[in-house]
Image 1 (tube, rainbow, N blue to C red):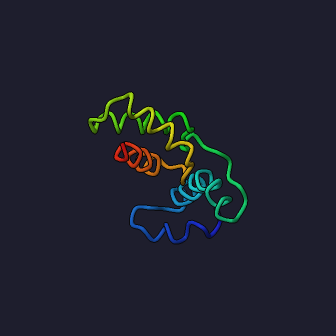
Image 2: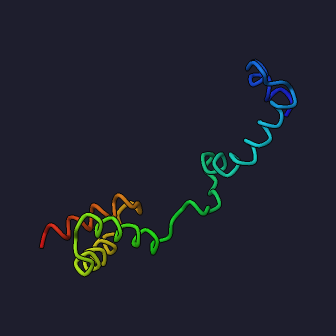
Length: 102
């Protein structure tokens, strides 16, 4: 951890050992993120939802907004074909556009 914890040691109550422990913990947690920022592909994580879980979440959102499940399923079927950005927000927007077009 060398001089990497020097800045942390300036914080009242943070000594050398605590600073070194923080640096080591952050290196472990930030490693995949830093690799991704450096242009190397980062390993997939559990935080990246699958298409099925995105679709399930989008279905839940739309049904809770008052849309009928059958109409939501049809709209999600069409919205999934459009691809988009792969986010829940994008999928819900595309499905809403399908629902509003009816």
